Image (cartoon, rainbow, N blue to C red; front, side):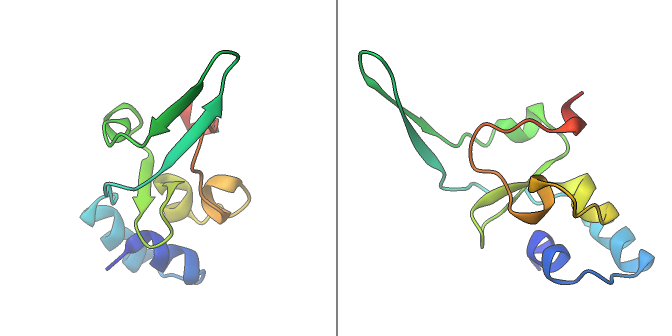
Amino acid sequence: MNSVDFLLTNKDITYEIRTEIKRLGRPIPDLIISKTDVGKSRNYSRNFNSSVYDRFKWLCGCPKRNKLFCFICLLMGDNQNTWTQEGCVGKGRHKATA
């Protein structure tokens, strides 16, 4: 089961189901995310590195949507920010990092 997609598409989830999803752990798939930034003298290519999951324990990924999400926000039902509605594919700040 893709827990991120399930949490995004099912808003009325019972406490028991949320507890089971938490027990299973956050999904940390390898995603295919790349971005090219234009610099003054050259272009810079950045690719997703799964080690970011080790640095940010709240981060999870959705292979179906190919985006990153905040697992805590998804699990708790906070659908008021980019990290739970659209996902993030680039540089993004999140209150969970503080």
